View (cartoon, rainbow, N blue to C red):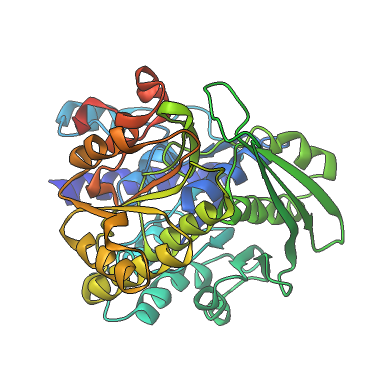
Length: 426
């Protein structure tokens, strides 16, 4: 029955695309898909009517549902019948879609549902690698998106990721690159982060400002000022959006008019005030080796004023396959390199993270291992001091948002600020 319904909604979505011919922009990668998708959709809305992926609808069911503009009815047969018999609402000029894969063949199927006119490949990391024999094999699967892109379209690649750049030969359309690398055609430079000088973080305040210059392929330079958006990884999400906007004819002023409207989804390195005047870097949505490394780099950018400390609360990284133990141990080494003063590791796999950190120089009495996120929050609560910068990150299954909820200054705002607050996650 599941496959039968999937085939029916796929055919219905394909008919919508064939009839209305919207521009399809597809975003894939191991990390950063949602932030890039949001940036593209927001900036293009200056000129076009745009729709983008609903929630995390990025698979063989989610992509057709986004195109049809409807939510999944779950197990309701009547709900599915209603979708199949209904007429779609107004179809937008542009769809910005996430394409997520777990198994070989997934990307080809998604491209059959909606062939992209423009494709974006963000980063490649060993997340969702369980069913692939190697990371290069995972990269080859993601590169199918580039090979299925319409020849008169555009393939947008992250120049800061060697694995991504290694897929460029698969591109069926012209390639444009983005990143902090000097070789990038849409190039970010002069990145600076400014934080509060008193290191007392209270609700309602501006916690940080990032400034960065972006030079595009036509040599136009945009000076971006991003409030409460942290880290080069989040800045990088704006770059493919700018590249695509330029390709589609948006002006300098149209692009800048939408920059401040780009908002990060909950759990994507959002600064949230914590108890006792601390600051939480909430990256609790999910985790992969590349995104963990990027998050620790953001933590490293903060230099707390005594008695404030850099604190990292790190849950496990799921779906890493044979690389799991080595990647968790490497994460501990990266925590030491980032100058973490106090490390809390969460879950059995994260024992390897704790060991890697101790081996790399973090004193053992500056580490604490706990079994789950609830225990982590309870342990952390009495140990927080004014001015502490607290990074919280882990895979979805680690439920690290529970740590944030335990130590945030405004727990009554959890529904608005945190991931996985719906009843289904209780």
